[in-house]
Structures are given as structure tokens and as C-alpha cells.
Length: 257
Image (tube, rainbow, N blue to C red; front, side, top):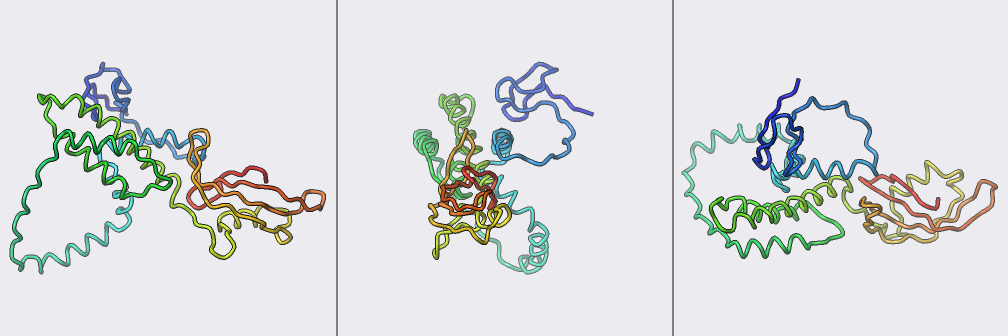
């Protein structure tokens, strides 16, 4: 059973009654039962994830979304700790209300927003998203009758899209891998070769490149190059450069192997 709404829950735009998606922001207007999950593929699902995350970022905030994901696992422990501290908190003196922080000017928000839009890092972390929320929040507070309202809404749209892409990248890639200080090896690649080489014990790791981020056909990956000496199908040794595309600490694709 589905429930329709002509007003977009994300941007508030009025749509025709039978619309499935908002014509302005693309948000879904028809709530459907969640489909049966299927195994994701590295190359086909990242763009869909960016779209989904952009909607969630607009609702919860970029940092808030990652925080929700990280805090779900320890929700029970937090509630237990809170309950045990209620008795002692009741006996403490009331804390004075904090002094209100002055709101930044629109010019300041514009400058900070443009800086965020131009941010480009090899590895993003959840703390990077706090800066987006710190700008988007005050921009949303600008009233409709203010002259800055239109430019503010346009800037919010760009910031939400950039924050969504960063959030999706954090969720898709996982933390950046590090080369071994001893011989430069990368553990997920070694594990992959153990499971896939015809004669792993006879192979030799000649040279490892540093792990870097690479956008391949619009998809981000951690990538490492390995100059590998190993036996071919005829039993002879060959030396070649091989490349390994990694996400969430696992090799998802290779080139040259």
C-alpha cells in the first residue's frame, strides 16, 4: 500500500497529485515498501547511494547522518549510562544557560560556503562534514522575506550535494589503507593474491606503490600498483605491473593480473 503527498517533504514544493517525484529536487513523493536487498556491485551503486545520501543529508545534516550510523550500535549502552546517572544528576545544582552565540553574517556564510564547495581532499573524514552543517544550519534560518533568501537557498542546494557526495564517499571507500613500513605491502592485496594466484608461494613482490585515491569512470577507489613476479599458465615466470582497486578494505577489481 502507498501513501501519496502532493507537497514535497524535502523542499516544500507543491506537485501534481499523481507525481512520484518532486519536479524541483527529485525527492520521492510515494512511500513504498522497501525492496528485497540484493548484493551491491561496486561500479553500479555509488551514484544511487549519492542520491539517497543527498536526501538524508538534507534531513539530518551531513555530520548527523554519519553520527546516526556510528551511534546505532551503542544506543543501548548510552541509555543504560543515562539512566544510572539520573539519580546523581538530580542532586546537582542547575547549570546556567549558555550565552547565545551571535549569528554569522550572510557574507561570512557565503565565503565559508564557497570554501567548502572548492574543498578537495584525498581522504575525507566525518569531521569534515561538521563544517557543512555549521553553514547550512544558519542559511536555513534566513526568513523567506529576507533579500538573502534566494541566494541562500541556491547555496544550500550546492552544499547539500557536495556534502552528500563526501558522505557517500566515506561510506563507500572506508578508511585509507597504509603501506607496510617493512616492505610496502598492502594487506588486502596480499590476501587477494593468496586466494587467486595459481602458485602464490612462488610469487615475488618486487615493488609496491603508495595507496592513492582514483576516480575511475566517476567511481572512487583506493588504488595500489604492485610489480609482481609470478608463474604464468605455462609455468614460466613473468614480471608485470598489476593494479588493485580497493573499497572497505577489500579488493573489488584488478587490472593486469
